[in-house]
Length: 325
Image (cartoon, rainbow, N blue to C red):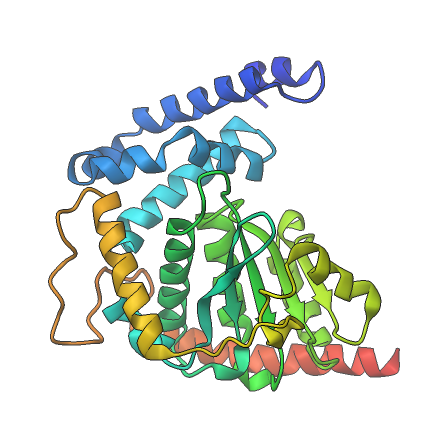
């Protein structure tokens, strides 16, 4: 712990003034890093937006206001953004992943006005972890774009109806955790796992170590036949607006054509936000990559095969433990 932080923490919880001092300290450290000069020159608006007080504060909170750890995390995240360029991912780049409705932004918001992402594992339509992650990143950026000014977190609603273990893998879950925790810290308010089957429990035991304690504490198991957990939904949502798939009264059905139009409109909004006069010209190749990907094709294939073997072995072991218990 640096001397300034130790001094600030000595008298109890940080005041807003103390927090601001730490934010400035992180920003000064980032500005001294020559690795980001290219980003400052090529994407000044993006760099300034990402280095805002609110953004730096999220990294500090994720690292319990430890400046050294927050700087390291922030620098790694900026490096990732420079390579991955999430702001350049457009609907046309992820439309094929989105067509089943496996992840979409709901029209419903929680009582605090937070954006809701609906995830439906049974509609998984891709075996490419890279493509799945790209679509997740697109959805995260879109959710953030639609957050109200007084909110910086979103809600995940995960519908386990019809779920089976072939819909998910340890590798994809690990990559999801990496993106959520390392690249979008403090963006998740709650993750509601709605009616997960009993055979999901061994899988969760295997992947839970990938989650930081703060993230794991935000994961809530909710069962429609359990009054105690149902109150979580009732306290969080207006039930008249919540989708019926999650115990609400609103009959919302995913329509890919309508959703595509909404996403294209949001792409245009993002272009304005990032200071571009227009979105990049659409490519004739709907699978075109908008950015370099840090995972080589051959490496992904090798890892996926290896992880599949680990999946089956570890989940089998956990299942036996559950059955024995």
